[in-house]
Length: 78
Image (cartoon, rainbow, N blue to C red; front, side):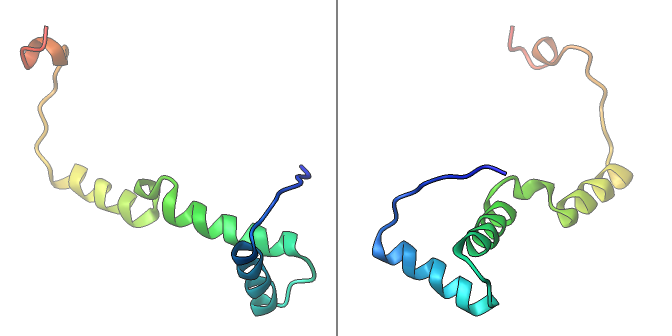
């Protein structure tokens, strides 16, 4: 496990304390893990969420596709 020393402002510290109290955590590290996990789920690579994958799979089943060997030549990009 990695350990970090960070400097936080009063507002950031207050948010961590609220999350800590809300979930009944023993320390701020647990609260930070929840905050980081929530951020990761909502902001990082949302296109890989299960509902997006299901949508893509449905599109692949229904869609008509054209195979292109050389994209640049096909669309005049060379």
